[in-house]
Image 1 (cartoon, helix red, strand yellow):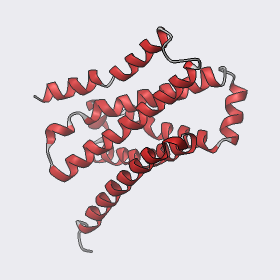
Image 2 (spheres, rainbow, N blue to C red):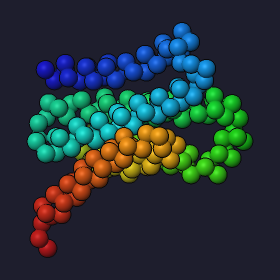
Image 3 (cartoon, one colour):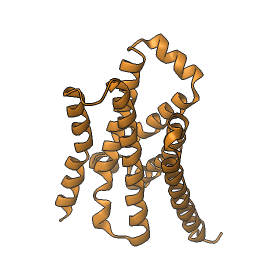
Length: 195
């Protein structure tokens, strides 16, 4: 059962990307396919990020370990889609010209937010294997993975900044994120040992 859950998440996480790539190859993304690629990979990354947090939160509330198995592969796919989003922005939107990219990074707040979220997610993806846990110790590994929360906040603000037409969905995600964060913090404070 554990392997089935893991491999369903590991293989299933790639399906949206494969579908999007196929749509691009057959010319089904409209007159501005690169823009569709850019926005869709960003949406996929955000959805996977929120799904990963929701799984961790459900495990936190219930202690059901089976569900938690899917968190790691979904977290890796979160980074893959977020990185693809950034690479598509740099290659297609900015024509791969570093000067253009630097100018947008310096001037555009939403670009800064998105890239900062990506930077925060990078060490999580790079330590997503069992050996990293053993080398770092589980306690340090868990501390590192608290970066998921600020990364999610930055990703949501980034998305809201560039896609206000989706504000209801992003606002709903933000409300869910605040609820999850508040519950975790309340529980940590309540369970903190007395001095």
